[in-house]
Length: 153
Image 1 (tube, rainbow, N blue to C red):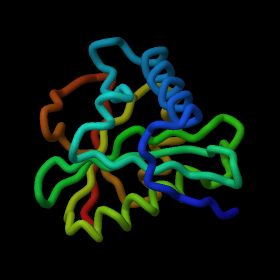
Image 2: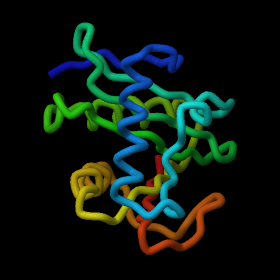
Image 3: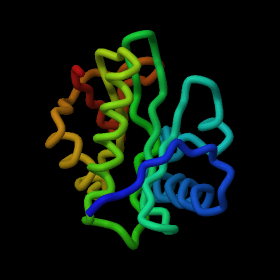
């Protein structure tokens, strides 16, 4: 199934609700000191672009790219709306972000995700797309509740 991927200015009620759901989900599955999901205001900072995936007028999911260094980016805020799980939303958003990262000249894309069983689908998606476990990057520190992954572009 096809999705329309749009750069999102974060002003719409649908994306704001999905990002609140994302943050709440991270907080429900992870101790507070290990939650690295960004709140809405932080996603508006320079160096972060968020895209949303749509089917018609229905928001299906989102994902963001944060520039860490001239050649290194971080995948942030990947979330699929519950009504669209297992329909390829995550793959579509990830494909778009990978293409955008390459177009921006990035050579590496990294991510941090949780280790709880609820993150298993995310781990599988990232592994299928060439992400491998790595050491903490940027300002992250070792954390038993975090899985760090990275891939070359």
